[in-house]
Image (cartoon, rainbow, N blue to C red):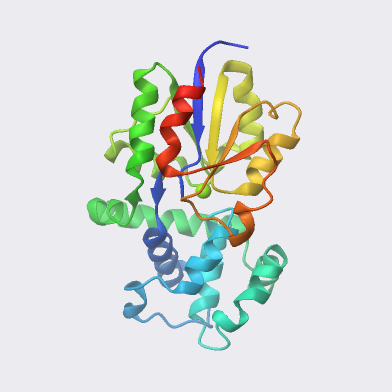
Length: 260
Ligand SMILES: [Mg+2]
């Protein structure tokens, strides 16, 4: 194992709050590229992110699922609303599969149109697109502090690499690498990274990902931190194993002190 020290970060919900962008880009993908007779897009829909979308976001693993959720929320008949939201969440993965099958959609196609929607906005008005993201400045500062201590930073995200990179550049953050969904699962990426780096920590807001890291013998030594400020499910903060620590924005500095 190399002694090159690195700290790993998830992107969405950890470095930036992109809630407005997820809604906007997914809605635009529905409007421009999705073939569906079940929706009519009113331009007013772009103005506010519905609570139902915000509440379901913690269940999302891959971007394409957001298009499907937006589609269900804006359906003209029997839309996904507060009263049926729990049913949807309780069987989240099965429900996503059911909707894919019912509409004869493929996950990869939905992912492609989400990326297309993002690219279209970037080409048209880059600044407006970037401004849909709210950075967590405490995290940005933490990343800069690590750099001063000659600890590298790396990003593992389920977003497309190119989109994460564009936002990071705006934030003046230049990590050692960014791995997006194109590079495979986070656990496989982490496994590979352990061969080259001494990983001082991984901050992520999806609890299941951290549990998987801890349960894999090749990655279980990585210190895992659940981002309290991210898109957490209500129960995520409770019953955490000793191995996964809940970390708050105000406590990030402690991590640099511990990790030497
Ligand atoms: Mg995340």
